[in-house]
Picture 1 (cartoon, rainbow, N blue to C red):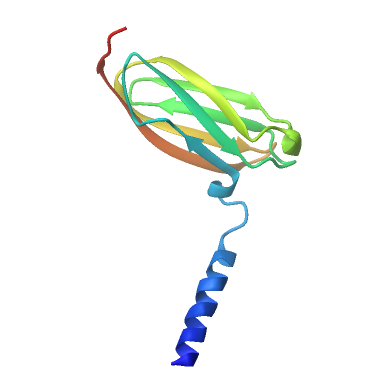
Picture 2: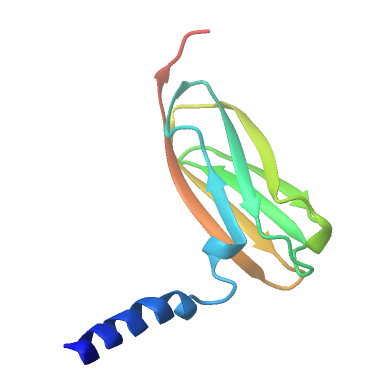
Length: 124
């Protein structure tokens, strides 16, 4: 019984150490205040990135079957701020995939995806 308990405790303690270094969850995260909006929607997207010397650009994209909007932000490596905020204004009705990519000069370092829905015609 003691041996089983010791093994289970060792497994619990070492499991967090198995996380892959540089995974998307550690590099970039999309934060929204809701997932449902009325058209035409103004969506404020907050993106948290892990500052790193290799970070060169942040691409934030909202894409549906009939509409795409994106923003590209130059990053200052490990001296940059952690939270970046952009607004997508007047998004028409549709199912959107939000994508945030942190890029180095040669590769995509991390990517986060989130969905949102813009429905009907909203009033102003």
